[in-house]
Image 1 (cartoon, rainbow, N blue to C red):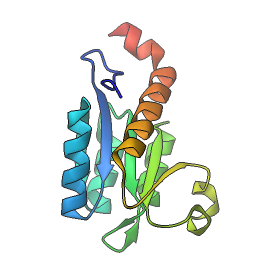
Image 2 (spheres, helix red, strand yellow; image 1 turned 45 degrees about the vertical axis):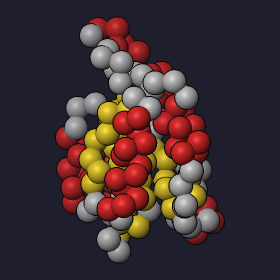
Image 3 (cartoon, rainbow, N blue to C red; image 1 turned 180 degrees about the horizontal axis):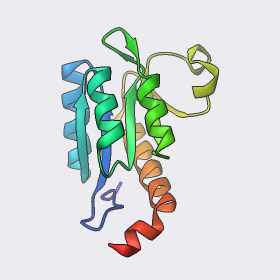
Amino acid sequence: MERATTQRDGTCNILVMEDDYIVALDLCTYLESIGVTVIGPAGMIKAGLEIARSAEAIDGALLDVNIAGQTVFAVADALIERKVPITFVTAYDSSMLPAPYRHFARIEKPIESAQVAEAVERMCKQAMKCRPQQMLAD
């Protein structure tokens, strides 16, 4: 994958929610290596909600379904409300997700970099389609 771009400075801003420090570190390091600006990682639901509600530019989100024993769906809802593309990162089969979330993209753990690259590319392209006027105004 070439560099992921949507913002005028040439970066794609991806929120990462992961409570496992090593997984979060590996994921963020990989994302930065492909040109992504990482928002987070957030390892708690409260922090994720604050970011989801207040961060100015979020082009996509990689959300672990289970964060410190809590589900991430409140954060997902806040992002969906803002029309931010999301991808769930989980060991759960899609049939184990609540019905409203089953149609969202999902990366199964253990995470493979090719899957992450594809998800980021898709989310960044989707974000570009959702905000063309904002980008032209900048």
